[in-house]
Amino acid sequence: MISRFYNPVDTRFGWGCLEQLASITAEQTVALVTFPEARALGLVERIQTLLGERLVYLVEDVQPNPDVAQLRRTYEHFWQHAGTCDSVIAIGGGSVIDTAKALIVGTDFGRFDDLLALLATGKPFVPSQAKTLIAAPTTAGTGSEVTPWATIWDAEQQKKYSLHLDCTWPAVALIDPQLMVTVPASVTVSTGLDALSHALEAIWNRNANPLSDTYAVSAIEDILECLPLLRNDLGNGELRSRMALAALKAGMAFSNTKTALAHSISYEMTLRHGVPHGIACSFTLPLVLGLAWGQDANRDRTLQRVFGPDLLRAQEQLRSFLHSLEVQTDFAAYGVSAEQAKVLIEQALQGARGKNFIGSASNVA
Ligand SMILES: NC(=O)c1ccc[n+]([C@@H]2O[C@H](COP(=O)([O-])OP(=O)(O)OC[C@H]3O[C@@H](n4cnc5c(N)ncnc54)[C@H](O)[C@@H]3O)[C@@H](O)[C@H]2O)c1
Ligand SMILES: [Zn+2]
Image: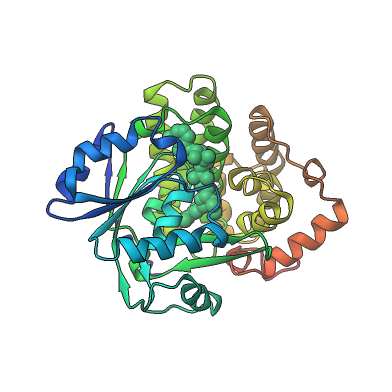
């Protein structure tokens, strides 16, 4: 069988690599998109110093889980006032990078609802204009810096949109672990678990290939070892670097496979129960591992490279790992009854991401 691995992002990794932003954007005018704490952390000033007058626009109020209500204002203001800038640099977690992915996709008249209408079709389209995106993650989690996807939330309507175009691949990713040392414990854990989920979802996935497996297995091994240590030593630069690399590897893995059942379940848990993304997509991992196991001999072999040959032991390893990070692994802990959970899993299997799951065709729920 011939497999293909494709990732067009110019990916740079290393302590302090954010400095390369100046040379990467030489001669260009740049808009910065970042998170509310960035100014107090000195990050906005640092970018102002790096880029000088080439920094022409700033968005610094991005809230977790970009929602259409806020994005509409941000988008329309951006296209009115920064429509001529050359590139957009997103410095933040997945919420900032996903916001920037939506911003760079220009509609004819800069109207956000025209973009939403295109997203609602679920079909690819060619935008009338687009900016170049550079992404520097400040959390070790989403991998959004090396994927083309963005999740746009609509809390009021209880739904989400998935953005994915050729132009939403970042041109450059700057993974600088130094940016991550200020991430608080709870976000360090939830984002690290998001990365673990990306790696596992890349394995129990119909689109898996030998290279995505290589990235995924390596990411899982690193995260299982590193995340508990980091949680107790948040200022440790070496552990921050290892987690940053692990999240990057997980991002590379699922950049070619998309996510699967655990993420499909997570969207409901975030929209209806307010569970943060990283927890919502990881508390079911022991359960989903059980549903994946035995579906496909080739996938079993990859899972067993990490967990060994015994399913019950593998599930217990994952469960106690999550419990050690104070993450509950049953639906009841999140206010979802067993009956509701059964329906939720069945519906999640029918969702776009659920269909990537290797067990989705059989009656696993
Ligand atoms: N595009 C993708 O491929 C992809 C994959 C997974 C998740 N996502 C999306 O990403 C979002 C979640 O992103 P996230 O988990 O990175 O969290 P986040 O971006 O929402 O950030 C979480 C919190 O941490 C703060 N923060 C971020 N960096 C910090 C730093 N260096 N120091 C101090 N505080 C900091 C933020 O301001 C925020 O309050 C969700 O909306 C999810 O849908 C996207
Ligand atoms: Zn995720």
